Image (cartoon, rainbow, N blue to C red; front, side, top):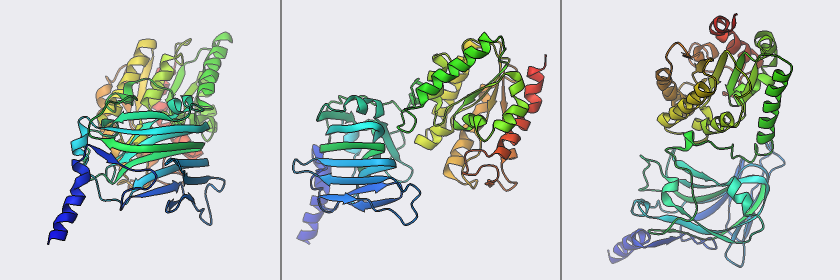
Length: 425
């Protein structure tokens, strides 16, 4: 009986302490550091581990490994990786509610190499609750500067409604692309001062920002400059741009899978497709504020943005809609003469019960309130892209998100009635 009492007290002890030491060198009993690649994982049992590759790897050139050093630091090395992680898991779920008000997550970080990679910090608080802090831009500024002490407010990893009573992944270091990162002296303190800023989840969707992803950083700004040059070339040639599309990779696809439909339906209007893969509402807003709607007077603007707010952070639909509204306001301010066709987010996920599909449905339900039916018109063409039972066909959406050439033809024809009345002289 006494032994059971002592075990119960020992289990409660970490949560009554002022500091929870996650001990990079040797995690507390029960906790494991698991190293993952996109297609596999391995526990760091000894001093080093390499994540094994499956027999038929989708990313055969990726490599992820980790090692413990004599100095107590954990090194994560990754190359050509979609997602590489060193993740603390498998220990007894932690009740971090007493730490939430004034708590911090602190550690020493040495960014050895990040020239072709990105990084994020994460915390997992259960199913559908993985909160992250992007650190690509800030991380690249630390390359070659040795160990730097960082501290984040624990609330950086929390959103209203999250249950922190049983946190099962108190920390994860994530890399993408290629790089080498070292972390040491990781702990969660009940009280402390945060020295490193993080996005406010309540305003992230309306705060202009360049896309912070390793796979996009090399082409995103050059594409922005190329689009400004495209607009300038139309103007200098005396061609009036009557139609503009704004969005993410689905809009960018007009230049690839959708190029035949584009040539048939929209090229005659000197149309411009301002779609950037991976963009969320805040990234489109940055582009609009940096000239992508300047130097022209289009008659019509078609906008669809927000599905990456869902895919990247499963954001509260109200916040995504706030981001969409902020972009609408920017369009109306810069191009008051243009009519705006606001599109519902396209269906995603193979079946209607897919979590991201249902999340986008909640966003779409709020969008009609942004349209006045005159200058801003709302249109939902989702049913035209789906089967009668709501499932998606690979003939139209091969990866359950992006359109095939057939899908782009359906999209173009679905816009015809509205755009013809707006664009006809």
